[in-house]
Image (cartoon, each protein chain N blue to C red):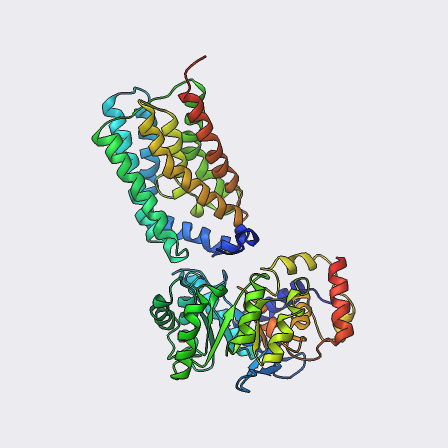
Length: 225
Length: 308
């Protein structure tokens, strides 16, 4: 792209905030009452975290794999692609993460998830709980109403944030955890840039997660002095 | 002097219960005249100087409520006397939404359809153009432009060939926000194009130095994008009162004053502001009625806005 430095984020914006959040609203209305099932899945994962085991890790990875595939198809492909021609590429990202979760987390059972009190565990737990329980509250708090609430397992941003939190709560070898961080972090950058151009306050949350999670994850991987 | 917001409020109140016709009436009422039209130099065909852009505003996907709102914008625009609608395959679902509006309103023969080819390979251009045409639901485009000069060396000969075969009426190129102006100048000077589309507004006047004079000299029509800097300019100036001299040229709002500044340049054929509000569409077209600023008033507008 010639003269790339002359472009700003808003030059790449294709739609208005109203169009984007009505897309979320129409998605919610079409899926209701699936939101209750999504909240229940979040609660189920929280329960599974209480006693880490290979089988529970496999169950959490399976739930995440299904949610990534579902959100990639039902929201990114079926809805977001109607206003963003790049959405088909984003859907590939969601499909890749779903496959990776299926392979590393379910087939190989490389991941165990559990609440932990080390810094990575505390940050991961906070991000996961925030994504499941607090993120849906942003829409009504920001005066967009409940119908535009974004839920873990229904909308991409809280699903991705919840996954990042869980990956910080994961135990096991570094390589699968780091491999699984790539797609969520790429999404956070893409979505954060979009939300920033839309002047949505949620941009701060998504971009902060993209900045914080790699740092915490890397610090966690270092041997103690 | 009423602000743009005041005028819009009055419009909204007046429009209650009668959705669209009041916009027509308001657009024509101040001067009782049809909007100013300018000739396309290569053919002499006249176009109303205020058109309608679709970037962001018409990309509403398959949302039925927002599609109907876009159609209402188009109806207000046509009702006020507008004809030129500009879109691009780069603008998401905007082409489909324009097509929806044209079909709903039955305005397919009235519209001056301006679209673009935006793809990296010349070989893929014809398929993209055909897809765009099918989205608009029209028989052929009036104008096709190479969007942001992307692969223009490959697309331009094919567009000129389409024109020669009668499958297209006019050929053009576009840029925005001052990019690749040297290349634009070279094309204006050496290629037989009908239109060039550039960014131009009271604060971004770089095209006044070379491109607008060159287009005039070469007999090339000029479409103007970003007249309000994506709304940032109107949001900024509307914090201040409209200057008294705006009334002398019949500008009732800041938006009309900014548009009058653009269309008063003799090289400009049509400016394409985008909006989601039917009242704004009518108000924009109404800027092409009544007086236009002379050179001294143009300078006053620039000085005034730059001081804000």
